[in-house]
Length: 389
Image 1 (cartoon, rainbow, N blue to C red):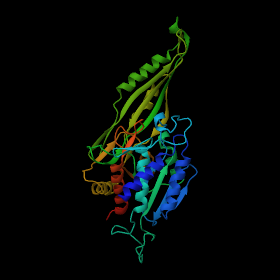
Image 2: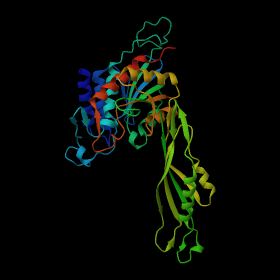
Image 3: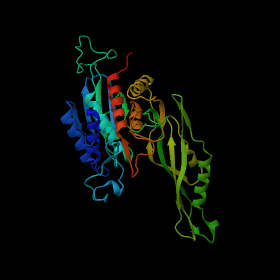
Image 4: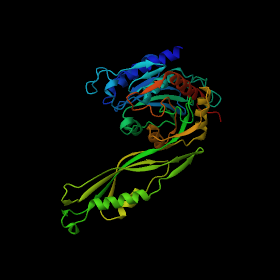
């Protein structure tokens, strides 16, 4: 019961602090708690990320979250004005905590923090230490446990990219984004792959003229429509990972062209949302073979696939031990900071309390029971790390 009470209180503490346009105060809360509750080395980088380290200097396992959130609904703000925010509303009803960031993802951050503090890092049989090591976790060769909470995840992974640029590339990571109720109700699964997102703009250029003599110009809208037809003919790629089929998608989400009803347009833009899969993507550049067409990439969030089967198995074992249900390897349709870490060389899995449909809503909530479950999973993964062999 003590863990439940701590989880509830810490989640409430983190969620109440606004962090949709400035993550500083939320980072302060995390940093001060880590300083008070652990003997870890706690740092804050220039981007605002909070990092804490404990254990040895051997292989590194990172427990990863983010403390920024999307803008709140007025009902989620004390006083009701998101533009004049000093505190978010946090309520507990029927075993759930309600408020902006409870599910995505300050509840998970609280569970990660407690697991980071409580994990027993005593070397186990799978740990390779130097000859003559005493068994103290600080020995060279003993694993290092890292807690990381990033800023800017909701706007494209700004925090994690800054950390990677500064040299933060752990060997392994458990990212606490949502994986609950994916395979079935009542379980928290282990995500071994997720899609990325590439946002592109197809720019069509023509030559303007008076619409009464359209043959004198080149209609950019027509060129854009030809490009849309070519897009519709493209088959989104697929990837098979751990027995799961991950399918990409593509959707044209906007078109903008023309300046007046009597002018043949000289420019038209088409926005494209593409969900990418590991190792494959649509060949949008092929559109540029047509006259007057250029493709601009506006955002490219990388997909993720766990490249270390033994680590994935370790995480699944921890998930099985941490709950009564039967968790499975699953895939996730949303991009996360795990994609950036995986691209940098970290073997990642995603596991967390958020359920499909909870994040970014005005009724956002998280189950306290599931927060406890995730705490057990995170702690179990840390205490199993590294696997025997």
